[in-house]
Image (tube, rainbow, N blue to C red; front, side, top):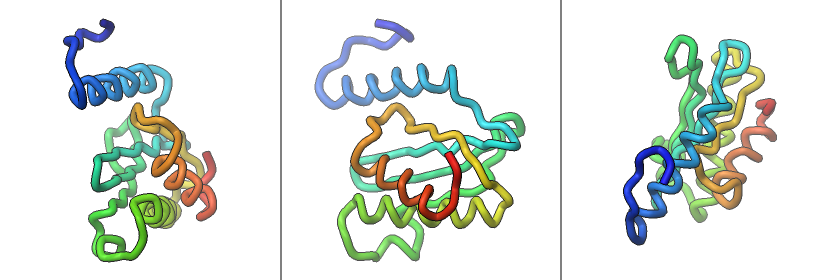
Length: 127
């Protein structure tokens, strides 16, 4: 297998596959001061979004389903992802970011990842 991963079983294999895809994506996607990278990290329970300037190595804005305003909210995980997307877009706009490069983190662009991206677009962030 590429990238030095061992052959694994079950969930470990799935996480290794996500890691391989993320490495492959990061070869092409990089954040600049003009268009920072919006990276999405997903777990079974939570979702995190960060706007990162890769040249400086700084996080410009971030939001998470662990934030106090979202944590106790109603709805399923997709609804929480929409709230995270709107919140990260709001914070990025406050930091002076108008456009970003989307990094799905090796995850499939569906479900919670797509919900977060759509909410960020609706809030005015350009991809």
